Image 1: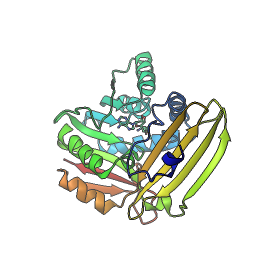
Image 2: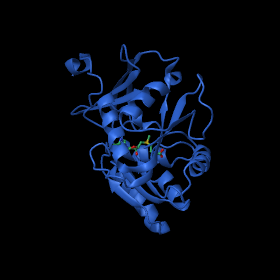
Image 3: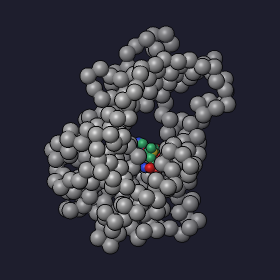
Image 4: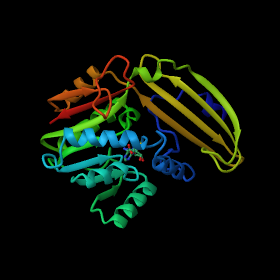
Length: 274
Ligand SMILES: C[S@@+](CC[C@H](N)C(=O)[O-])C[C@H]1O[C@@H](n2cnc3c(N)ncnc32)[C@H](O)[C@@H]1O
């Protein structure tokens, strides 16, 4: 265990456990998605309402009918897109979230096509969608190779003139960041039900805009290991990558409400066109 903790984790290596898929954490993440007050796994209800107003003006359903929601979670946005008149497909690798989304859609008789799968690995098809969304800064978890792979898949899946809309965090988010290491004895909380020793570390990878939030939960007979990666971006570097992956027109905003992007913006929202 000491050797494990001592080693410098290679950038973007995956921990043995995932916060989205772990038996104890997946239900906590689902609860965080469903909490309308707080920006947990899904943003708060007021943010979502305003982002839907903007998105449906930016890409109206009558002109952009086929919509793919990458990392749809329990379908919070997917249902609102359906209500706004889009034909919606949602993909998420959390079985729990997709089961919740499906049950909710069935209950409301919403014809939404949900798929449980990893959107990096699944075939997203070709020339199928008018709009593809990746909401709540999920792009930041990927290595640059996976990011470019995703851009190419999204580009292929879009119809000509189709739009890819996503947000990411900017350097502003970490402007007061300080590396840290902590330990706690924990029980019955977000991280764990049974008592464990929780070791955590937060650091920036030198020479990059990538941060690691690393957690080890030590139990008498087991260890859990979570690596949460986050890269933050400037608009120019992303636009250059997108252009190399086949995207043409682009618009830059400060968030999913379409506010102006400034040097102080903590998020950046791109609308790029195939
Ligand atoms: C931060 S949440 C955002 C959820 C949703 N977009 C929203 O704003 O309400 C990220 C979601 O993406 C899912 N996810 C992360 N990586 C994924 C992947 N590679 N393939 C499929 N789903 C993924 C997680 O299970 C989670 O539901």
